[in-house]
Amino acid sequence: NFLQSLALGEESSEVSEVLENLSKLYAEENEEKLKILLSLLEPAMMLLIGAIVGVIVSAMLLPIFTMTQGLK
Image (cartoon, rainbow, N blue to C red):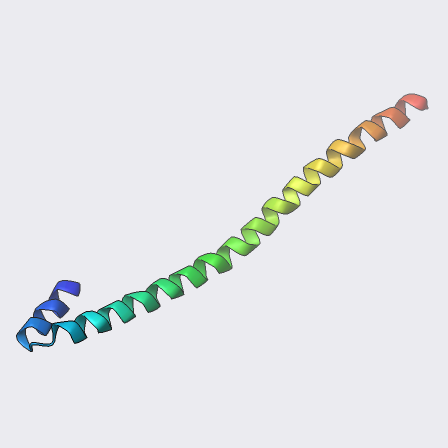
């Protein structure tokens, strides 16, 4: 696609315009892919943070529960 567009630009003597249009097209594609990646990354990070908090809470409460079981 890039080479075809470049060849077309060479034939019509408008290489700079073709390259400018291609750069805009690729920049828009990259922005869309980045938005998708960030929208997928946000829930994954929330799950990871939730798991870390769960491990910390269980690590703090488990000794308390075992200690109260020993008192009975």
